[in-house]
Amino acid sequence: MVGSAIRKAEPYQGKVTAHLIVTCVIASIGGFIFGYVGIPGGLTLNEGIADLYEELVYSNEHYLDQYCRDGAGTDAGYLPPLYIPGIIASLIASPVTRKYGRRRSIIISGFCFGIGAALIAIVPQTIQYGPDKLGILVGRVIAGLGIGFGTQAIPLYLSEIAPAQFRGGFSFMFQLAIALGILIANIVNYVARVPEERRWTDYKGISISFGMVAFLAFLMTVGVKFLPETPNSLIQRGSKDKGRQVLEKLRGTENVEAEFQDVVAAGQSASTVKRPFISIFWKRNRPQLVMAILMPMFQALTGMNSLLYYASILLRNMGFGEKASFYSSVMIGTALVSSTLLSMGTVDRLGRRALLISGGILMIICQVIIAVILKGKLGDHQHLSKSLSILVMVLICISALAFGWSWGPLGWTIPSEIFPLEVRSAGQSITVAVNLLFTLLVADSFLPLLCPLRFGLFLFYAGCITASTVFVYLFLPETNGVPIEEMACLWRKHWFWKKILPPPNSSASSPTAVPPTVISTTSVAQPDANRRRSPLQPPFPPSTIVSTSKRPDDLLLCTTGTFSAFQLAAKLPARIQIRLRLDLAFQAISVTYSPAL
Image (cartoon, rainbow, N blue to C red):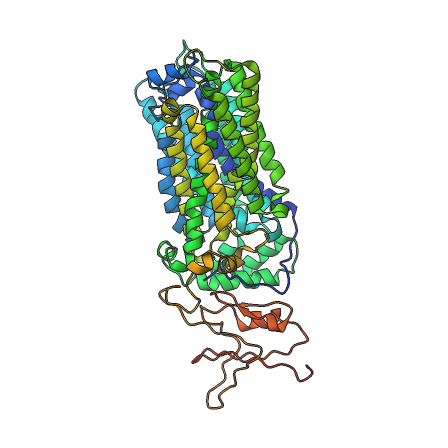
């Protein structure tokens, strides 16, 4: 497997630099736009803006039965024109990201966001009747393309430029940007609300709201042009010298030899894979593929995105007034932002599994208690008491806090860091497509399910979170602190996945699998005098990878990949004299110890 799982003799060097922080902030602007445009919780607060998206939202009706009778939620007018193009764009982005770099896809995303937002902001003000709706629809479709390219490339970009020991915190910046976008969208859409008696196109707040998106998209597009490409992408595409220069600048040190050599090894093998969307279905990539599908699916099935989307409607039905619903929505958004911000400093200390499991347990408890409180209270003329309403709000905020440190950011982070280099872009495309698909399905089914299920909908989400938490506990290995090019070894050590993966020398690993070379420190292969010695320069066969530690007897065959004899020798202790011979015919390696030993 490309993307070696090599146990290094020394840790990667690197520190947090100002250059790294600025790079991550600029790249994360796309996440802010996605949260602002793609998960518009505040849009349902007023009838005027909601009419823009052809949704049936009745701000004067305060009871769920009225919503259900009038067909609220049956017309899904906002998300499909965004998310369906986003799903298609995420798949198209894979070859673009692979062949032209992560930065190119982010630039395309910014361009699409800018054009789409500009159409939504300008067309209704210049064309008052007829084609204005068509212009808005086209703008949403183009913005959806930006969502697909941005969510495919930005998490990859953040994961690859961040040092291994700080990768979790920097990857969380994408979710932090999304949460900030959701919060600002709630505030702006409330301020720009439209009086009922006026047509929404008569209000300039629409131009201000989407004009801000267009400006941010322009800022991101221009800013990304000055950002470096990731070292992984540069080396994979043959620019080793430039890749090393970028790596040294990002890490703030010239001592990057260990990381550089591992990335080079992964890049050499990745360049031999021509069809990543086929390679990703090979059995050797089965664990990562399962995670790429189930992690974003479970993230959507927590129901948190739907709760953010329809929070105002739900809170109005619990007896909150318009202003109270707005303030409550802002409280939920603030809780999400605060939790994500705080977890950025703990994810690389506590680990991914601890955050996912603790967040899942807390969300289950909150969802069950909310369901018990709302039992019999969601219907005509059924208001919660003031104390129960406050309790429900506190529980929703706690659930948002738990989501903000667990499934919110880690639903993006884990899939972006587990794939080997040759299929990483394809894997991220699958992750984004699944995420957008299930977010669309869950959000558009929230109100239709809320009508027949009532409080049972929260029990349904509690059941989904329970299943996801059990899945993490049983099947997700800890990726904290593991270099991104060394993830493959985790799966072969896991109690379940090691049974699924084929042995390194199996033809099931890949159609062109080569039997691995086993290195032994107790039984040394003897050279054949009749054969010519091979030089040290050629790399090991593609199915060979060596795991080294400070002890020479800890040399272990870990998994498949590419590793050169020079790299192996560089990682062995200085006190041991190593003479490696790569036998091209029989793939044998000789190890000779110094007589001094």
